[in-house]
Image 1 (cartoon, helix red, strand yellow):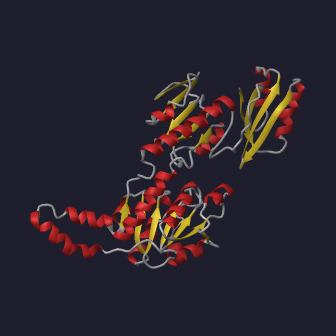
Image 2 (cartoon, helix red, strand yellow):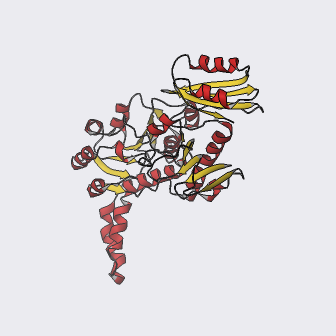
Image 3 (cartoon, helix red, strand yellow):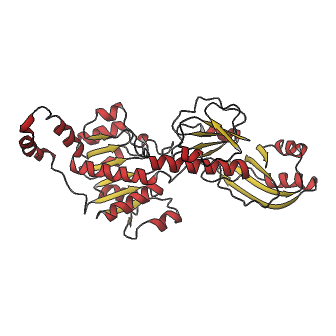
Length: 386
């Protein structure tokens, strides 16, 4: 029986994926896996039994990934599962900025109590909210992953000129892009030529404050900046100056804080990007499937700290080994297997940064003594027998 600790409310559609081999609930003792959405985990003491954490969403800022890596805990996320929900909100945000819809709604509601005068007041006052159309304007999409690709294609279908920039564009994403999307030769060209800029890059130590005074200096006067990725990508101090200088005509963000809310020409959206029934269900289903495949088969897909590693089961005894990515490790492991008269039926080894992961199918039984010997190899983090 596998035990799954639920740190947040998880969609029932996702939980229904679990078979009768699984027990899941909040605060379950000695869990094999954890499912989480937004709960902050960085100050949590992780039980020694935990083998994997599945985040039902794309961002993992609430998970202590480095600490998990040291313990050999695989951290999964669900990229693309909420992509359509975020895409739709980006398009909405762009149109709201272009047509001054949010300010117009607030003003219209302020007329409450004017009775029969309201229609005339509306006609007289609507000129304050004259906007522009997005058709024919240029949208620059920074980051062409699952969400960025959908945003680019949707904007192009609405008649916009779309320019994309992603130095790490995957072949899979490239196939999904409309042929009419222009490839920016560099980020500077995209920033300089775009009327609208939409950010779709991860936030990490390298991208914190990614949009700063230097980047704002390149942009067109009156540009609309859309941030549905992570709040920390945009330096708040630089943003406030760019707004004051007329560089930023509107900042639309799904990650407002007090300083951002206080800033003029900001449309603060309360982190609604993935807040649709469909997104929550899709994320939960993907998270559950990845967790099950790892716990039962040792396969890894969509991990942020371990390499993608998949090997079909063939009925043999399987061991998985996570280790530091150091030379000679495979020879040490297979040497122990040979010493114990075990033939390798199938094997895969992958690495990601400082970590490596092995799936090995064996002809014969794997005893506790052998497991302990493998575990004792310098650099081995953990060993599982499946």
